[in-house]
Image 1 (cartoon, rainbow, N blue to C red):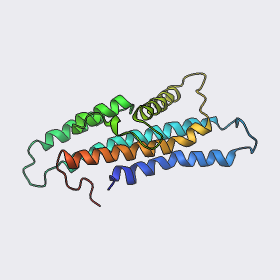
Image 2 (cartoon, rainbow, N blue to C red; image 1 turned 90 degrees about the vertical axis):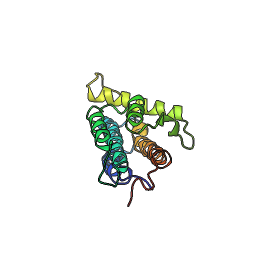
Image 3 (cartoon, one colour; image 1 turned 180 degrees about the horizontal axis):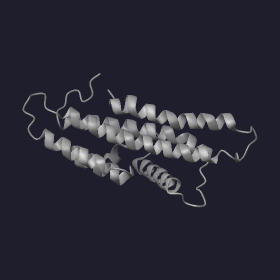
Image 4 (tube, one colour; image 1 turned 135 degrees about the horizontal axis):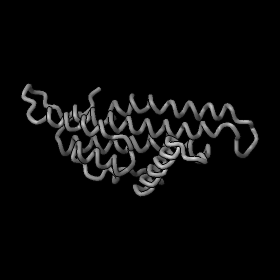
Length: 190
């Protein structure tokens, strides 16, 4: 069963990127080639997709720490863990591969989340490179690099699906870690 971070939070945020892609399709001139006046929509899709990914990772860590909370009144070390994770989330602002790996490792003890980032026709190394590329574009766009980076619609239209797959792999790995290592029977109940 996937986390609420994935099924509700992330999917809702990723809708913005998909709506921008729909707007791009509706505004196309109908002729092949570069569509002038629509490049900002492609750049906005990059920003919205990366933003949704960052927010998902943060929400997943919040849910995971809540899943580790003891049911009994004696909370033991959990309040300290919760405070520590909330502090880490307060400083998390660039969801690149190394920062995501470090955050998940420090919060949950799950070493090298990258190993779970695989799916048909995409190796872990390819997923890491694609995430790195998206973060590079996001950085250039957000910090006003001039000339503006050229983001083709083919790239931006595929980016939400890339992040969906990446989030599903991350979600599954974190859930399996909580179940198999921490003994949490149902990390994210309905």
